[in-house]
Image (tube, rainbow, N blue to C red; front, side, top):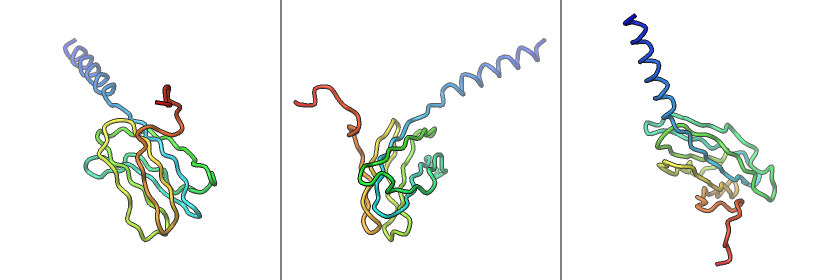
Amino acid sequence: MKLSISLTIVAIICIIAIEQIEAFKSTFGVFVFYSQCKIWATDNIGKTVMDTGWLNCENGDPDLIFHSRDITANPYYLHAKVMGSLKKTKTRGPFTSDTCFRLSGNLALFALYSLRRPLFIKYPNQNK
């Protein structure tokens, strides 16, 4: 009897703990001329928590192609790399909320920009 009550209490605590894990959404628009790119997220200790793998980054020529991924680390860091580029990996963060980024450029020069007000979302009263 005592064992079943203890197991019930442990199960309830585990369910409550699982519900506290929050997932953040990271959205990024990608267009890097003639190249492949990769975007990934890490937690505080550098463990990878999200990875897009290598993407064909010029599919939407000339428009951005948007990707969305869930990230379960809090806080998290975003990283971007263009295959074959001699430029360093771009790192942004730490973040504790949803994010929106734009990765654009070419093999020699690429940038990872934060979009505080995503361009693809229409906001009311934009003509102020």
